[in-house]
Length: 438
Image 1 (cartoon, rainbow, N blue to C red):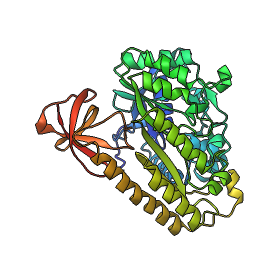
Image 2 (cartoon, one colour; image 1 turned 135 degrees about the vertical axis):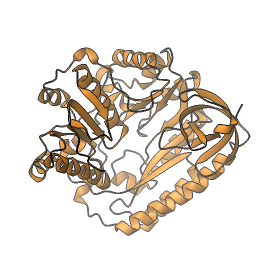
Image 3 (cartoon, helix red, strand yellow; image 1 turned 120 degrees about the vertical axis):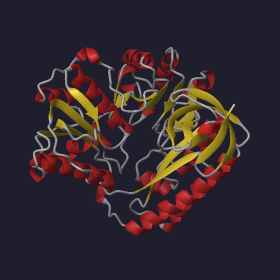
Image 4 (cartoon, rainbow, N blue to C red; image 1 turned 45 degrees about the horizontal axis):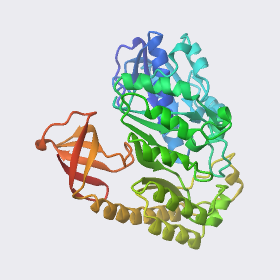
C-alpha cells in the first residue's frame, strides 16, 4: 500500500480489521464508540490521512498471524516516517502475544487484548458510553450484519487457541440481543448472521440451559428482519429444537454452518471433539431428515498430528458420502499452548496441502452436481453487489463471502442492491448459479 505524505487529520482514526466475522463485529462496536466521542472514523481507509491507526488483529493460525504482523509492521514504518502519529493494536494476536509484540515492535503506542475496549477508549481520551450497547457502524453492506450472541468458548478442542484469546463462554442476554436486532432493522438491516465461537452453548451460563431456540423465536419476531442465518454450531450435544424453529419460521434460513473438523473417529478423539464419526453421520442424517432442504456448511482440518493416509482416506470417503452443500478445509497449524502442541507436528506441509487440495477437488465436484439440481428452479435472492456486467446475490442457502453466488446480467433488468428478487436459475457451474429475474 502506498503511504502518501499528506496532512494528517486531527482526530481522524482509521480502523483496520483482520481475521473473522467476530473481529468485524468488534471493530464496528469500537467505531460507534469513537464516533460518539466526536472522532472522525473510517474503516480501512485508503486515504492514509488519519492521525491514529487501530489494528484489530487475528491470532488464530499461522498465515492469519503473519498477515496481522505484516500489517502492524507496515503501520509502524508509516509512523516512523511521520505519516501517522499513533498506532494501537488490539484483538486476538495482541491478547495472545502481547509481551513478544511489545519487544519486537516498540513503535506501537499500546497493545490491547480482546476484552479491553474501555481501556483502549480511555487511552484515546474517549468515554466508554454504556448507553451505546448494540450500536455499531456497519462495515458490511448495510442490508446484512454479523450478529454476535456470545463471546469465548468452553470447549476443549485440542487444536484451538480461541479460549486462550477469547476466554470462557459468555452469552449476551436475550433482551439485549432483541433490542440490538431492532436497532439494526430500523437502520435497514434485513439479514442477521448469528455468530459465536459456539452457538449451541448459548444461554447455558445465564439461563442454565441451551436457549438458542428461544433466542431464534424472539429474533424472528423482530419487524424487518427477513433472514436469520446460523454460523458455527458445535456437533456434540446439538440442540435439535433449533431445527423445529427453523421449520416453523419463514425468516430463519435453512442453513447451518457446523464445523465438523474430521471424518475419522481416531482423529476426532485426538482432537477432543466429544463425538465419533458414526455419531457425526447420525447427526447429519437427523438434521437432514428434520429439515429436508437444509444447506449444511462445514469446515475440516487436514494433517492433524498422527493423521495417517488411512485416517485421511476415512475422512475422504465420508466427505464423498455426506455430500455437504458447502465445505472448506484448513491445513493443521501447530499452535503453542494448545493441547495438541505437545504432539509432534508430524505431517509435512506438502502432504497437508495435498490432502486439503484433494478434498477440495472432491467437494468441487459435489458442489457442481448439487448446483445442477437447482437449474430450472426459482429462488428468493438477496442482492449484495454489482460487478462488471452482473448483479450478484445469494439465496437463503448461502452466506456472504464464503458460499455460492447467484449472477444476473444487468441487461436483464434492474435490481436494487439490498433488495430481494425472485430469480429463475438457468445454468450453474461449480460455485456460481446464473439466472434471470422472474
